[in-house]
Image (cartoon, rainbow, N blue to C red; front, side):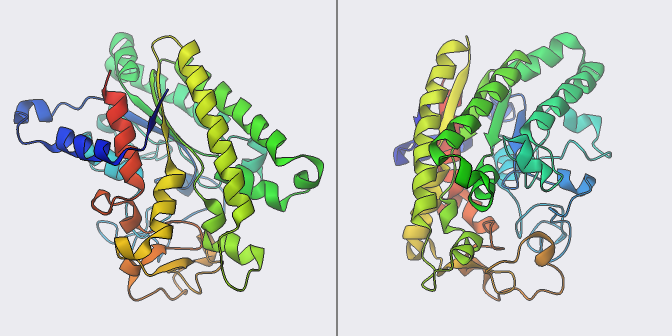
Length: 358
């Protein structure tokens, strides 16, 4: 299992993906046949629009900087990592949600998005918000495979999935709910981490059995630094919640060990760990370096609690969004994702590079 974190790899990757020395006929053929996304609101490009849930972002002021300036269900002012990654890999401009009934066959073969905001690896996490847990997302992937086979045939469908990238980013909601539930009094955090990791193992194995071979799994971000967690902590100085960040760090260490073990047991697999913690913390600890000035409040409303329906068309937004790390009280602005700012996509592109080095 490979870990991506060396800055030099980013430069190599950007050169590799955009080098003019590569003939144009070659550059139009991406390494991956498709990319599939599984996870929560960091990746959800609109699946929750089609669910009876309050965990939605299909209303203003979300999407104010998205092409066409319209809300799409993405929890940000603009694009998300799936959109930027698909474009960088020359697959397509955006990452379409699988639950969209208007999903055209032309989009199916190059990958779709199963992520659902408010979800987690633990089914109980999604029950609270009526969203799609990882178990249901994997079930939908099976439905997707049936549709893909109907379009391209069994042999080509198997080839597409085997050459695809499966990107998973989940777990934050599992732990944010843990801190606010009676479970915290009944179970030590280390034990709960192990339960979640058992679920990670199950779902990676299921996706492998369905034909997936190349995986990128993101670790937990420093969610103790999100505006809403800081607000809930009651700290008047609005410092990050160190306990939660430490728990995320410990979980990530366990996850890395698990992924190394999984790669060794799943023949022909390539599993890369994405260090989302380090990527976001780099910005939060050095905001001026990246042109940010506000790190503890979101751009929407007071920036303390507003998210989903509480961030709406009647909620005022900040004037200078480029200075804000967070758009609402949980989710980053598009600028945090833009590669040119060495942001979250910083380590993700490094990770993709490692998957390419087969």
